[in-house]
Every structure is written in structure tokens, then in C-alpha cells.
Amino acid sequence: MGPVSSVKLAALRAAVRKREDSISTVLREQGIVTVHDQVVSLVAQRWAKAFHCKVTIHTGLEQTPWADPQQQCDIVGWQVSSAGNTMEWMAEVETDDSIRDIATVSAWKEVVVHGLPLYLFVPRGLKESAQKLAGDASVPVSGIYEYTFVNGQCQVL
Image (tube, rainbow, N blue to C red; front, top):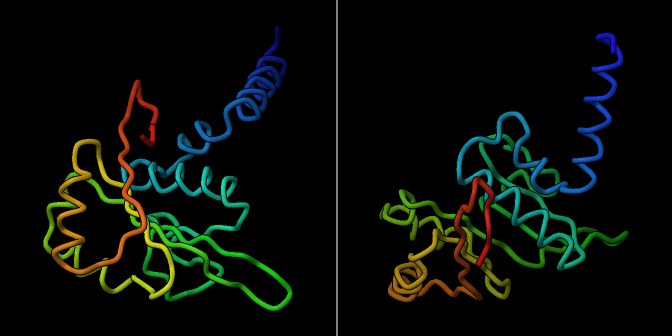
């Protein structure tokens, strides 16, 4: 097999893998290296399908969301219509370091929009800590989910 054939074969295999496991492929994209950005990418993809909506993300890679240049939240779910874009829900992803940072709760207060659900994603084992932080700061949270990594793959629990 010549070099051109092996390149074509490799490209074909990559395309098949991408179709079979698109979420895992996206997580391996160049530049998505932090735990935060991996979780944001995974949650955005899954929730866009689950809620049948468009999402915008705010990561180290994506600093200019299309729907709102002032977006402070990690993930925002939108309903898009000819009448305009309507924000439906928001989500924040925290890491071991950020959940222990005192500025995190202040950031939650800044991003919360009254009447919109705010979801938190925290590392496994930190759900109760996040509940306490949000409760003590009077930040209304609609749900707190934990995530972990198993064999290098992010799983939301």
C-alpha cells in the first residue's frame, strides 16, 4: 500500500470513528485540553440534543459566542426563531480548583438571570459542597450534576 492509500485509509477510519462516537471525537479536537473545556463541550452537545435547542459555549477556545457577546455563563441553551433568540437555560461548569475559589459564588450571582434555570456541573463528590455554597449565597440553582472521568472519557452522573 502506497503513502497516498494509507492516508486515504486513515482518513476513512477517522470519518467512521467520528460518526460512531462524535462526542468523543470532539473532545479530542485540537485545543480542548482543560477539564473545564472538555466538560463544557460534552454537556453542550448532550444538552443541545436533549433540550432540542441551540447552545453557545464560553470556554478557553470560544470567547465570542454568536448569540450574546456578553455571555458570562459557560453554556447557554437557546430557542431560535424568526422572532429572535430566547435564552432557555444556563449552566456553569466548575473544577476542583474553581469550586474552592471564593470568587466562584460571586460569578454565579453575576450570571444568574431571574426566571431562567441555572445548572451546575461539579466534580464527583462535590455536589453537597456546591449545594451549600449556592444556598448560603442565595443563588437559585435548578440542578447540580456531578462529572467524572473514566478511562479518559468524561461521564456526567
